[in-house]
Image (tube, rainbow, N blue to C red):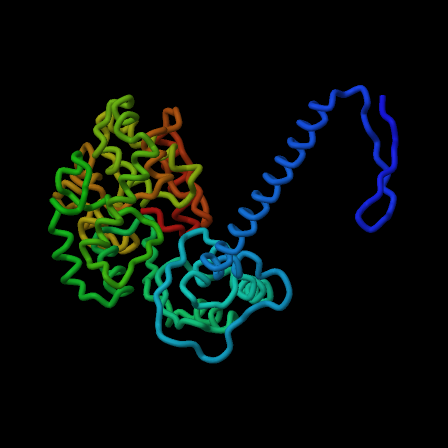
Length: 385
């Protein structure tokens, strides 16, 4: 129960006071002390929070500007910038990621300025990963323009197509990097340093994986070849190549050899497992493979230029004359061809021949059907020999 009373303050004014008459006087006193204690604690915490904010402003001022640059005017540098700086754009970086990288390197004054510039220029979506040399303290639009200028990119981007031979790959790397071909040939002979899988037994052909690569200025021919071999190892591991080869009863190296022939025989992914089955069927039946791409590889000429005399040459790569696989891969197979060699489609086919200009093949187990299809191919001028 409470009783309301009136007291007079120092200035003579009346103050209403509610007194809990049911609560002992000592309890009321302790309650007042707890209120004063909580008030003191609250004041102390407020002081700590304010102090922390002040310290944060001084220590992380630039970070705070970058994080909160969406408020008010957008900070941006003017002028042509200052000294050079190298920055790296990683694969998959968004405009926001690039903005952060530029801000931390003091290339731009705020992250939002670059994000706005990127939004207004759709070409920003084509910024390539790699190492760039640009200037510090630039307007965001200028920084974006420099990232879009190939002259600023120190990194070389090189694409190795599927089905390239070792010789073609070394030449492509040389031309793209302007490093003499002889240096790549020397590096290719350092097989103990290339990181080849043990089953390659020091043979490089077939293990320079076809893909797009980025090379920094300090990368030499050996480092570049190591990257290509490492990519093969990565893909082979993802395919579980060695274990699946064992399940097929095939050596891992032979899988790469078969995949290289599949790569050269078809450009249609859906057909690759069927060609793989033809190869396995012929091997099991002790029939020469008859894959002309192996002879073309051996002679270093396009398959369209092979002559009747070429197929009479006694060579382990002449799979018209000899039973079994050629001694090495004949090119660098892509992932689809490696997968096909590991997962052939069941079927009794032992023949296939080009069926149309789009690259589709006709598959059969009948010699008569094969000869008829071959005649149709020749009549259509598709180059069936």
